[in-house]
Length: 156
Image (tube, rainbow, N blue to C red; front, side, top):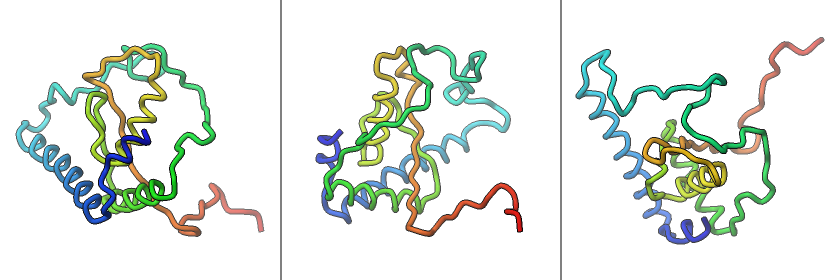
């Protein structure tokens, strides 16, 4: 993954331009697809997948669904970390989720991270790469910007 991040432009303006162009292209494709079909007509590529008895997508094997955490899962130097934070802020401002197909090459640092996570979780698994991938999104928070509210009023 480090090589993928290093291959991206280091110029902040160029990174931002490429990231916004990439996301705009994805958004334009979704808009055009939505205009072509009749209302209520289901596009073959967007049909809902078959689910198994546990409500998960059927047709794959070898995925560990247990809860896990990984220390140092994303080792970045200071420059890579700063670039990733900048990209997160740009994507967060767009308030959307994104898709990276299993067969697609990452086009930005965030897609490189999404790909690395996908590869980690699917290592040794069998799945249809033509119908698989990962959904990703970004959140950019500053200290104190979000304080979770308790689910009930605290006692007096």
